[in-house]
Length: 385
Image (cartoon, rainbow, N blue to C red; front, side, top):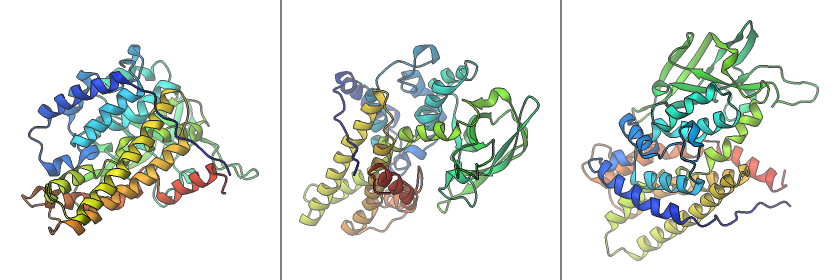
């Protein structure tokens, strides 16, 4: 059996100094934000807040200065992220570009494509990811959206679904098929590529809202109909899409967002229980706190590995899977400990936050890779399949 480790992250005194600066900023910037709004956390959309973060130098923190970055450490970036999420800051609009689209462009993009990076770092260019498709589920290798080679570029036809924030985004990183599946070798991962798509200036793209059962509009269906993408839109090399997209997963799956989505409910739960909790409440909150401390340790370890230039995709999958379990457990425990029903319209902070988290919790084990897919990746990493 193989094993994979989580080495201790390197010490970072500068990151801890930065933590106080971030907290002071959030104390003022979020002063008027209601608990139910804070519960939105990384689905909260606020362009002004994203620009303020850019002005502070808290987007693209690890990138080279020539691309608008600040050449700070991955652990300093981690501190900013966990403080933002713990405080319930609205980070959705710049989130994807900062987390994975920007680093991907930085790694494989052309000089022309990299000109977008300073706008991302300024909190002025927002990205979405065109991966999921109808009737495909979590099997990304079954992608059917096709980019056919034509004179001067590619003609794209197909549909992407569950595309978060596409209606607010300026660009999409599109994952689609540019070649044929090799039926002889059975290689389903070849013949796929990624493209940098300007959503505002490319004809043939229709963005249609998918409204959730809570009445919120985060998701979208994005339809490409004879959409022409010039050769300059190709991101990286044609056919390298699978290697490129899987390299993003360590960024997408390992961060503090994978165990802090329900954190504001835990905060309100502690307030609702009060200073003299029952034995059952004390045990439950202590156990949840222990889980979060362990997940934080694992997640920070991944940040340290990323800082060292490693590709901890397996470790990231484990963090994401365990984090989703805890995130989904928090609303169930909260309902057992406090005699209040979830009510999104309630003036009681606990009830309103409980309603929001309860309605969103089922998605925690879907986004960023389903539980079944993640456990398959982990099993392969351990040599079990």
